[in-house]
Length: 207
Image (cartoon, rainbow, N blue to C red; front, side, top):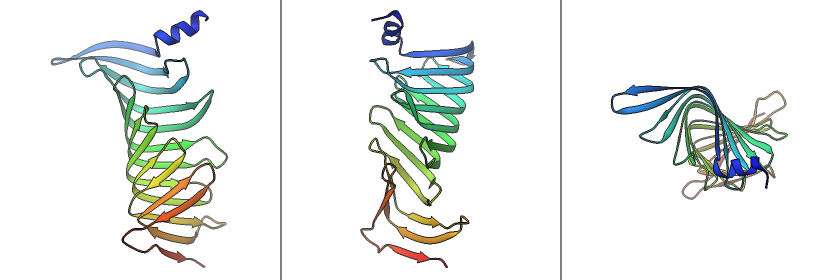
């Protein structure tokens, strides 16, 4: 085992940036400019990289507070998702990430799938991304909107009531519209299914 690997095992968080201490009442905040932090697993695998031009570390709450956040999430050596937001908070030993404001989650694949929302909670141990508020999923072919969605580790996005689904035409115009209580989109197979317990699934065709 080489020395670099040992360093990763015992120090799973690497931070690059300038720091200063700021006293705010009884709190002690460490201000970090141009944060660039890598988070590794106990086995040395990179989980994600997070960057911010302006952030602080709360020594009392043991959490990071970041502005204009960009997170690159890894699957092995490759980036799987990139998330941007106005602000974010890292807590629970960097295992819980909460992002707020103008959320954009982009999958790195051929279709460049996008998820938008007001808030996102990422539980790293459970590998679940929960989006709340004005959620929109969009790629070159389809567009779904709802108030809540969950992206699970099986790459299936569950959209919660109410759900509106639009198929795009050649000039990006509406061709087909469906309204449903719940919808499921598989990012790997690009398949979509709908579910309605109390109401019928309603659809519209545009000519």
